[in-house]
Length: 213
Length: 213
Image (tube, rainbow over all chains, first blue to last red; front, side):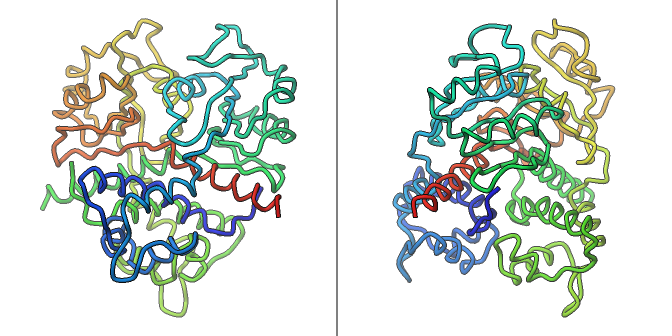
């Protein structure tokens, strides 16, 4: 797995900046200061400038950022305008849900195929073809694969990840397993549902405390 | 929906602090400085102290934070030691995957029941009972519900969220729909899968650039 030069947390903030900038744009706002972005993000203006400086220089001192331009630059940094190919490995409930509901296009990712150990339920998942997992090496020889979306059962996760090494550039890992033995040149990104549930918990508690007072 | 006093982004960082502190604890590290936490999180030491100061005073100047104590305090702030009740609304692929795979206990949440418009496939989802959505009001009268996990199809999302208003404190929204008409005293938390996919995209691009050089 890759040692990351720019902190993962800086990268994770970029989609949030983009959502905020899209909201501003939809309200007709054309310029925004690092102070305003910072207030929205719970960071200081200096931290905002520091985040953006990681990627070169945006904005002008005393003038702020052009909302549409900054959004476009951040979207470009995140590859939202690209066209990477993805496959889903493991078409249980979660794999199926992701294949059917997720709009990958907005992220610059095109879902191409799905693989399962028992692809018996049909030849497609949503609009993409479903293959037996035994065909994956042959498929990858013919079709370049950028991203494998790993939604196999946990006990199968690490072996499957290792099997993917020869032909993927990134693994989007939904399995709650910490993957081991993945080389540096393959990026692993884990999905943490629980972060969001814990935030919900926190705000519910705050509401209850306020109602008591 | 609630106007939040402490920034959502501060709250969202807490689980990441907790994971880092758990890693440190597992390595036998007992103290950590705000500098070290900041380096790990891509923030300044001052920002780290500012984040923790939102919740009262932790740590001692020049001495750092006690890893186990700080982890316990943050976990307590996020309600990880609590026991909130949750129900799942919409047992399609995603609802079923969440019901079966997600370990809510670690988050202080207990999954109690599931509801669907066509609960015909069985009387249970995993280990929890499955009811017809028409029974939800009667269920809520007998069983207090803290959190509704919204996994209905997008076109049904807002109407269902409004129907939940009388008896939930929080909605964990997986529907990709921006919910409208939810009052201030109910917390809505949206799940953004794409943030994680965009980070994956970014690091893959970085790897490719490095390989070219």
